[in-house]
Image 1 (cartoon, one colour):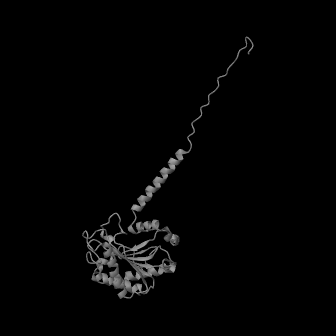
Image 2: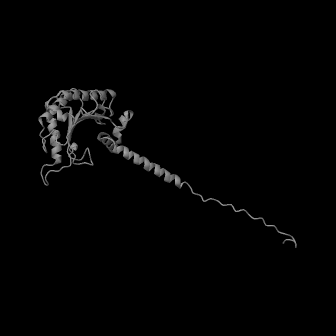
Length: 261
């Protein structure tokens, strides 16, 4: 007890205000925001790419292992398209697997075919519908239909005369390469009459076989041809436009030596 008469002095205690602990939640939110913006700009970039780049990206996500050999040249293969709108003869066909000599051989073959087609008479309308693209499989030569301009009679596997002349030029060059060859047929999604016995599977296969007959008859060795495939409309070139006539095409794939292995 305090002595009588003593004075007790009590000092005011200063209250310390502590801020609440916010943690790192804001960092997570910021990281999510940055990731979303990156994804947005990636989508915007993809939308602006051409069909060949879009296809290459789609192929990569289907089978990333196929691109392992192409990493030194970049994941995405470049393309040299057409005969008038694209680069002139001599421009490289970039990307794809295989040794430098292998790619060079296919590039030179594409250039020789271009030069021969330029001098071919009576096929001016179809020349611009032939594309050369290097893929993980090898060199793809694509005969692509357009509105009002087709390599075949409408709805059939009958090759037009100028188409036969084009395939003859290609066959002559393929015979000099000794690479393995695969021929593919593709259609758009326009269907035949309901319940018809003949459908897009038949048409794509028949068109690939029609090209095969011309190519084999004009120089290609039987041992080079490894497969003839009909895909109907399962591999559309323009998935967002399934009725686009450019989905109808015949593809001739010249395999690289690495792809063969």
